[in-house]
Length: 171
Image (tube, rainbow, N blue to C red; front, side, top):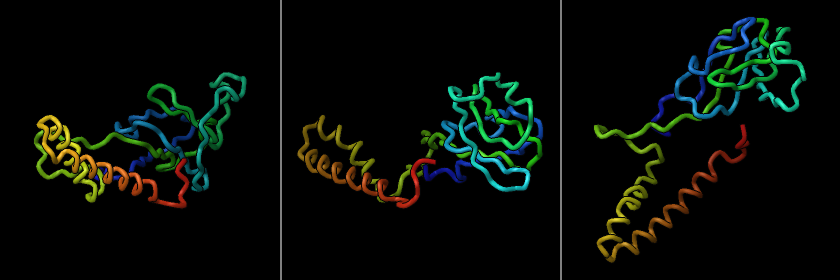
C-alpha cells in the first residue's frame, strides 16, 4: 500500500533469558509474518527458521529452552513469538519481524488520499466502478469500457509480475 509511510519491519530489544515476546509489542498491524531475524551476541544478523513441531526435539518445549544460547528457531503461538533457544545475551533492536499489514483504507472524510496503487492504474478503478452503471442503463459505452478494463488488467498483471526481477519472491 503506497499510503503507508514506513516499511513493514519492526524491531524490539532482545533480552537475555527471555523466550516469549508479545507480537503487539512490535505493532498492532501484523497480518502475517514473512521473516524473523535476530542480531547475535556479536551484532551479526541471522535469519531464524520457523520451528517444525513435527521434527522438533521430543523433549517438551520448556525443557528444550532450559539452556540459553543464540536463537536458531522461532514459533508463533497465540499472540506471542517464542525463540528457541532463548537468548543468553541482550541486543538493542535485536529481534526484527518483516510482516504483511493491512491496507490504509479510505474513510468518508478523505479528500486527498490516493488509492494505494501506482497512479498509472487509477483510471482502472474509475472504469470498474462505471461499468455496472453502464450495463444497468444499457448504455453503448459499456463495451468500450469493458474492453479497456481488460487492457488495464493485462497491464496491471504485467507491471506487478515484472517488478524486482532477480529478487527471490519467497522471504
